[in-house]
Length: 420
Ligand code: AMP
Ligand code: GLY
Image 1 (cartoon, rainbow, N blue to C red):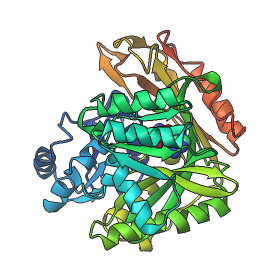
Image 2: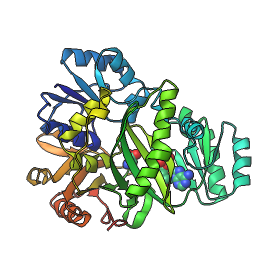
Image 3: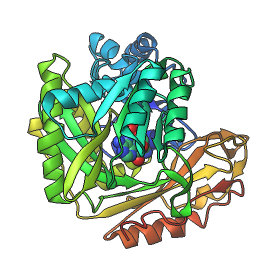
Image 4: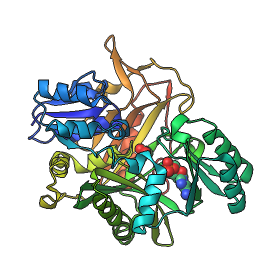
């Protein structure tokens, strides 16, 4: 099978690494890829949000199967165009991608299927929004409706912050993505992520994870895309996971099918857990980054069979093979991230890093220049390890990271602290 993966971050490096281990994988191409991915796959410079040019590339390169990594191509309908061109695609339709691209859409789905989530209201008018916020009081959560690169949520602990967030968002801070705001009840509890494959009808959970959103140790500093993750998430016990499936995921999938827009791909449910009960914080329609890295490390080569079956509506025919193990990943980011940072600094020591089924350094934002690896993004490397226990995986990953020589990067020293 010739396979094309769209994307070029740590998520896609880990997907490529797992897919490549499966003997059914013949040629593997990743677009655009990065310096780490280029060591295991061909990289192609493609505009991955332009479905028609991706379809032409697939025809020219005899691609049999396309795996879409990030949300942007899903939200712009690339999966639909590729399917119209006869390709087998892992990734949801544009209509189903609204579960991530519109917060008010997701809230309406939760209403329709009675899935537990925060109480909410939505507004396009600032005065009406502020009247509502003032009546509800703080803490309260203000969200831009559309995709805002992870920056469109303000958890306001006091009223002035909440009112300012309403003004900023409806005042155009996020452009069209913020033309509508969703205002939510603040939910208390512990967050965890649940990953479920779905072929439109059949659902198959493939793992749980927790990430660390703040930049610095002790959950201090600004919010980021995620500074590390581990799997499984101990807070998502079998009982709570079963409740989340019955009360949230299965009703959502049934509602999407009923509307004629079945969800086919990976559903990433962000959950808030309190007193043994899960509530939905948000859906994403792609793997988390860096959560994918720990899931891929635990699943390995079978991922190709699972994703391919999912894309062909054959999920009921396959079973994931679970090892009772743990994985942990540490993100190395450029100094200054998530604010402004410089690009182009050199990273040494990567050649000597172990590359085994339980130790991998996935590249997120790297390129090769004059024979050296340089940093080209905010989040740059994901040092990932697997072990019989979380302690084991933690010790291995932190031992690995000591061998990376990159003075311009930083990482958190406490990944996994909640679970350890
Ligand atoms: P989202 O983009 O919707 O996942 O929101 C980003 C983060 O904001 C979540 O991971 C939570 O930590 C927090 N958050 C979002 N909605 C709520 C809520 N209703 N109550 C408490 N925290 C929230
Ligand atoms: N790590 C959080 C996300 O991928 O959305």
